[in-house]
Structures are given as C-alpha cells and as structure tokens.
Length: 209
Image 1: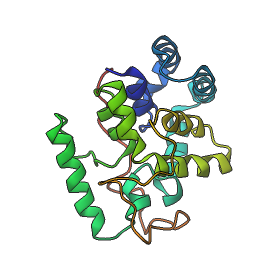
Image 2: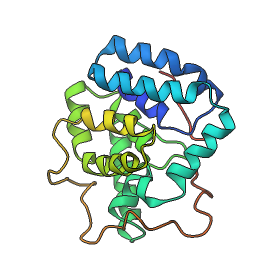
Image 3: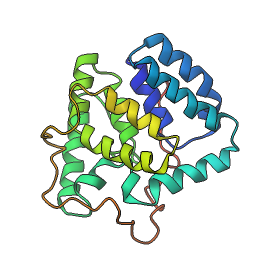
Image 4: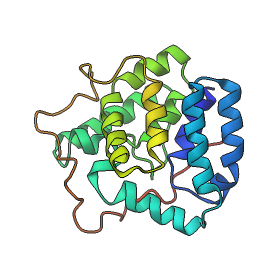
C-alpha cells in the first residue's frame, strides 16, 4: 500500500474524532514513506497543527462550508468537469465500473468521483501506475488548490500535495473518464438548495491504513 495516498485520502475526508487523534501519527507515516517532498510534508504538518486542537464540531463545520456548499472547492471531481449535465451520470457509471474491474467495491454512500475515494483507489496501485492515473484529473485538483490558495485556507496544503504526486504537470489533455466538457460548470456557481444534503461528506466510509 502507498500510505501517502491513503493518508491524503483520510485527511481530505469528513473529519471525526479518530481522524483528529491520528493527525500527529499521519505526519510520521508521511515522513517514513518519503513519497512527498519534505516541504510538502512540512506544509501538511501546518495543516495538522491547525486542526489538532480545534473543537471537532468547528472543524466539521469548516469542512462542510468549504467543500460541500460551493462548486469552487467541491471534492467531487465531475462537479468541475460535467456540472449538472447528463454526461455526469454516465461518467460516474464508467468510473465505478473501472474501480470494480480493478478490485475496488464502493459502499452505497460512496460516490466514485469523490477525491478521497479516488486517492484510496490509487493507494493500492503500484507507485508509477498511481502517479499515471492521478495525472488525468490533476488539472481539476489544481483548480481546487487555486481556490483554496485564494482563501489562504489550510486545506490548500493537502491539494498541493496531491498535485505533486501526479506523473505529469497539470494542463495536459485528460483522458476518459476525466475528459472535460466544452462548457464545464462555472467554479463560482453555488449548489442549488440544500447543497449539503444527501451527498454531504458525513458518514463516508474510511478503510484502515
């Protein structure tokens, strides 16, 4: 297992008490595996220090407000590529089938385009293959990173780390199922009513490292 991908998956998931307690250990694991540059691990340490002593309910509220209530920072990757178009449903089906063909079954509550789910899938690939697959949606991940940079938000460090693991710099033509529509959703558009409803990040399954 590539523990760095797994830890980034966990850190980008909806926070709970177990994750908060794990933060110091997460940095040690990242340092031991050394898949990320030392500077990236140091930045994730800043993220860890920010949330380690925060009241858990405040962290959870921050997470929902940041990722679930606007498209500009959504961790559902097809939100950025497909918006609300019909193509999004088929892209979900294609990606889900891709996971199944490669030995990963999702729970009923897990959407396949959720970045933590994709990172978890990559965590059980070979290092070179994981980096190659990550290169496909890296442009989308960098777009989220830029949004968080503008907000000077601590989560920007995690998105920067994810982009750095890609085999190729963002900007190359993505391949299916990550191909961008001619008219992608505007990153500034807000979700419709009840944006944090049935697919809010609460309760997502987290598998053990």
